[in-house]
Image (cartoon, rainbow, N blue to C red):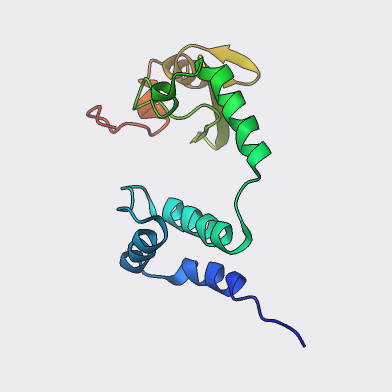
Length: 151
């Protein structure tokens, strides 16, 4: 006798579920309003929650280890954990891609600036200048702000 596990089918169905239905699932699974993030975020968090409820969540020792690591980073100040000092700045580790004159350039956001070709930079404008040879607003060059400066 084989048992059918409905979880993989539920997870696969998320890709084609209309967004209003995803938001309803969020409310049912989290007992809260869905955050105003993009669809892929909703899908991934709902998928995790479905699996968490079906198979169990993180082990207590894993939760303790993650909390200890978080305390090492923020000194135990829980207010700092959800806070980003510069709301416009991409999250550390984000990779910015830009094609310029047929060449693709990849810049990585670091904790204290940016990295391109293995070198640290304090600003995106310096990288844009190195790539193009002319002065650019780095945020505009990498598509993070439109030409009027709005994010």
